[in-house]
Image 1 (cartoon, helix red, strand yellow):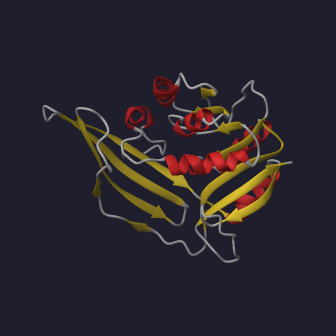
Image 2 (cartoon, one colour; image 1 turned 135 degrees about the vertical axis):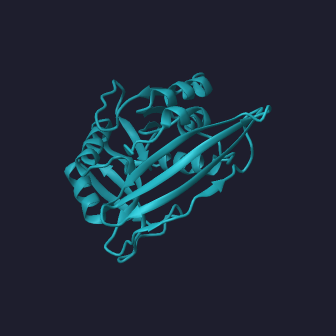
Length: 252
């Protein structure tokens, strides 16, 4: 297991769950409005959130490491005015764009070393204006974490969204408290109208970091912490809380 996952095969089926993500996109749009209209979205997958914001008048640059994701995003959203979709590595990107007002990322767990995390933060900082905002959502690694492993389950979409195809997943996960790694093992299935079933494996792990590591990385990369929250309801962080954390940052 290389820890990266099969995102190339997943690109066509990224929205397999049939979930209306409008509330999520509206959340990020509202956050961006606090800072301005130029938005940078690293690790964007298909760029769905970016397309939503661009349709609302934002100027959005969204990028992903997987070319197949960006190709699929361009098929769907290439005609959206104000949206630029690019291939790029969050740890090493240089785009010729005006400084962004706002950026966000929910997928830093895919960066498996603290050095890569800092590299990514520095690259993002280089593309933000002074005083621009970055929001990071992450799971924190804590001393009370415990290892566990789940049994394999089947996951059905909220609605089938691909004409002529039925899709589902099976999967299990494993938490390794000693390393801070959360392993995910999935198989994605499609069944056509002739009952032909195809599948591919999608296996990866997410790396978690401690609160102190995050704060140190932010400081070294040129960010100040403006606020911390424990949920998207923006409940103010209280000392001693653990697990999910939202950091709202400003670039120095």
